[in-house]
Image (cartoon, rainbow, N blue to C red):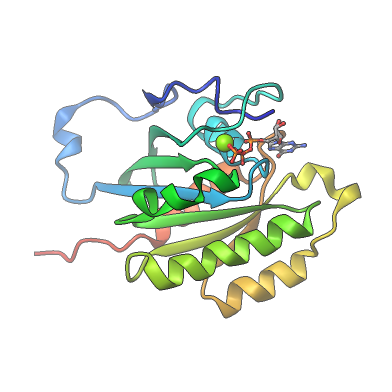
Length: 200
Ligand SMILES: Nc1nc2c(ncn2[C@@H]2O[C@H](COP(=O)(O)OP(=O)(O)OP(=O)(O)O)[C@@H](O)[C@H]2O)c(=O)[nH]1
Ligand SMILES: [Mg+2]
């Protein structure tokens, strides 16, 4: 189960819509951002990344081992180009001690739970606390309730999650990697919240 096995350990996004013109890479408006995904095993972290980077959903692949790296660029309406360097961590308990390697220095963190799993929501809260203690100061943190397509089996209310997010100064969004609902919006909202370099 999972989406990571179909993702090479290192790859760049296949869906980049921006040109490869190197002059744009040095544009002062362009940003590079290290992004980490954290959350319980099986909540859909790898599927969210695969949907964002490749536009695909794979219901049959394997759990992530260690972590996997992908990158993807996103062009914003104000013509800023953001290059996300994405670390998709393994949610299984045995890998928990590796997490600091991936969230250290991250500009943004996506903390994911599954809307059908209260245990995964508790685990998300654990990761939020961990990031508050040990993450970069000013890290952009987003709380994501994934598997929104399974709303008939919902057991974490949007309201509870929204309230928790507000208290912890996080942006909150519900997504479905399966249907692609809110996946691009998630990354756009992160991009908008990244600190911009001060104009010289
Ligand atoms: N219905 C539904 N299933 C999903 C969704 N996202 C992921 N899944 C399924 O949930 C399972 C786990 O997805 P993964 O993306 O591998 O989970 P993960 O968080 O990366 O798990 P670890 O790598 O072990 O940390 C897979 O069977 C997916 O097909 C979603 O939005 N909706
Ligand atoms: Mg995974």
